[in-house]
Image (cartoon, rainbow, N blue to C red; front, side):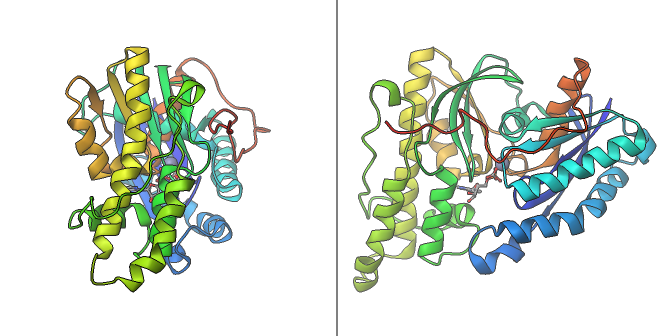
Length: 341
Ligand code: KG4
Ligand code: ZN
């Protein structure tokens, strides 16, 4: 079965064709970074408009690159939650129109579950995880530690109680004018920085009900509050030192919650997904946990892409499930973010 995937939940306009949930025939990702960079963050209105302008051409390119004709597409899978509402609606509406025009089924899927599915795609040289495993979903909007028993069956163990980890990278980069997008810029800068130059605090969130939860607003504010002091003592430390010290603490917060979950559940396979899963320091820290098997998607599948959407969609469709034309988009999914206390 050849499934067309459509992903427009944030600022990547992506379409892909995946065969039988595994083999990527094409995966076109048109990034809007240059359009959001002047604002140092995603502007929802611009994102929706760019998706409307691009979605047809991106989808055509995905079908062409797969060496197929529209008639060869058997079904459509599209992200309808969570994400920026206007952006989601563009992809969802396009997918419905495609499905209706071709008389083929379509399925609306969860973006975070799709991220967790990414390492199961083949043709990429990665090893495939078996269920159950511990999921680490780290993106610009979410930070989730979960137990995964199937592609559509997760139990959320921990989440952020305020900001997502990717959001913290983006905000710190924005305040220090490091560049955009913040995560990859900080990752690169950190490689030549001294991570012990600044001692940023860890949240006191590691007990009881919050054993697997994380918090980033305290760290974000501590780093931002350092800005004035930092500017005055410019010669003492470099931008790279700030970046590396922040990144070390941000990753340590994740590791503490994740290792608690691994110990308590006895699950020793960890599957990471989402944009922050591209982070080189997170990858190297987890590689050092030799008692755990840590599986990361290849870098090109960590960020938003339609291949993961087509891949997971296949499994619903194979079970005979499909969405109705009145299905709508949701900005949020309940349970993906915890409140404190
Ligand atoms: O999954 P994703 O592409 O979009 C969302 O679903 O949010 O994740 C985007 C997030 C952004 O916050 C970006 O700064 C972060 O992933 N990111 C990184 C890296 N590459 C992207 N964060 C840390 N290190 C990276 N190398
Ligand atoms: Zn994402």
